[in-house]
Amino acid sequence: MQAALYALSPTDQLEPISVVSATPFYSSYPEVTDFVKSGLHKWAGDARTFEKNGPFIEFITSPNNPDGVVREPVVNGNQGKLIYDLAYYWPQYTAITSPANHDVMLFTISKCTGHAGSRIGWALVKDKEVAKKMTKFIEISTIGVSKEAQLRAAKILEVVSDSCLDPKMENFFEYSQSLMSDRWKRLRQVVMANDFFVLQKYPFQYCLFTKDFCESHPAFAWLICKGGEEEDCQKLLKEHKINTRSGRRFGSDLRNVRISMLSRDEDFNIFLKRLTTIRGPTNEN
Amino acid sequence: MQAALYALSPTDQLEPISVVSATPFYSSYPEVTDFVKSGLHKWAGDARTFEKNGPFIEFITSPNNPDGVVREPVVNGNQGKLIYDLAYYWPQYTAITSPANHDVMLFTISKCTGHAGSRIGWALVKDKEVAKKMTKFIEISTIGVSKEAQLRAAKILEVVSDSCLDPKMENFFEYSQSLMSDRWKRLRQVVMANDFFVLQKYPFQYCLFTKDFCESHPAFAWLICKGGEEEDCQKLLKEHKINTRSGRRFGSDLRNVRISMLSRDEDFNIFLKRLTTIRGPTNEN
Image (tube, rainbow over all chains, first blue to last red; front, side):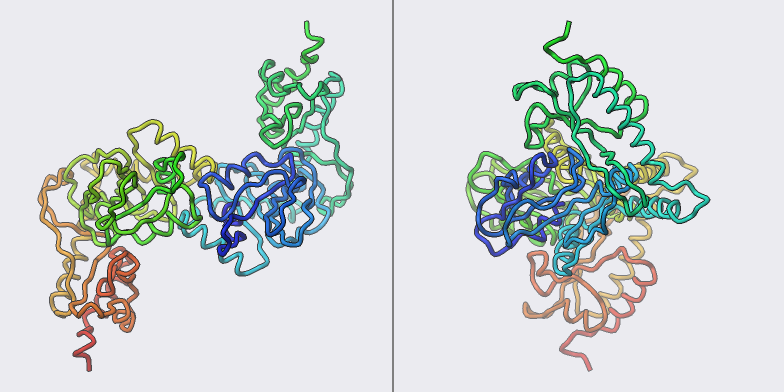
């Protein structure tokens, strides 16, 4: 992410380039863009309200973190450089509707198989010069990426790939999709029953990978309180011992929260149980 | 390194804090300090000629990279914040003359055991708030450090530590010291014989770890051409197929080069062989 920002930021400008993403955006973007007060780039907030002329960088997270929506760029401007964060573009989360074919695409193993602790990501970049600058960034900032983690990630991805090609093995993505599908089904049942929350809606789409129509099963649930704008959904859930991240952190409002769908089975079951008991702050006993 | 810079840089100043180190300094310091044009810190060059009033950060690499000299801070100023880079403070390279007891100390496994590819370092920091800010930096920049590499590094350090405590095992540092000692002896013989180069001199000191007097055996040889200031030592060695890094990269001059003493045996032998043939540019055939 930082390497891409570094590579796409012009070095001959007096002012840092504006970096935007449409709300709700990944909560780390503002911090990662601004934490060392870089003279190369500066967070400029919601891509939808961005109206400055000149060059800019837009982050497009698709499917989006936090709300799982499949996204396209929103800024109308021909001087935009686009960074596609495809961390969640895997068949267990979303329909693979077309081969990813953008100029700068970021991937990570953390959301593919859950090996977040390996800290291994990769980028596919069309422009050789941009790729070189990204490599340069990694060289300066860390000299390189842990070899142990690289080796383990390569082996893990090999096994995943084999599972998709060898009919005697259980296909990793089909297995993961069935787990996600089951969790989402159970979550939807609880949300339907309590009548106080709404979940983000997703289209039914044809997936080129599974060769079947499928629903989205995002890694996070984007839950919306039916209360007014004043409703602090994170606070409400916190009172019921459910830890979430407030929509405010994603440039959105207090009514929304992001809930991880990737916890352990036991934790997920406790979460559903607690969510079932909520009847909303207004009609609580 | 970046985490320490981040943590020690004031956030309430209009201007970035000056970062200095005495020449010859580690060649990455200027780049690491300035590569994203941070508004927090700015490279200000040689610590010896630094005369600006106000706060500053001084890097003290001890033993120093590139020249192996044991160092102390050089800037006279009470507003200095010191970062001790102790990457080479291990018994195979230098006498351990006192327990390291500075405010901010950086370590790495790469120079201790040679596992540079693991990219594992650690810091010992006295001030809790500084330590917290360093942790925050790591959180924002990478979310964390590869778990695979952490586990492997911990195991390696355990074996090293065991080797020092268990009399049935070969002490890792004594073994490494004997290897370094042998290489330095052979290099000094070649340098003495060819009469065109000089090596940095080191004091003979008592080492609290080996409980014996010993010479320094730095990870790099800092070679000085006897020619005039115009002599380009890197170029000369390059003509003899010896790759070095020019003194200029370390804020020093063309007469100096840094040569790795940590190459594989075979490569080190070829290096000595090639060095033997050099008679200097003026009296070459």
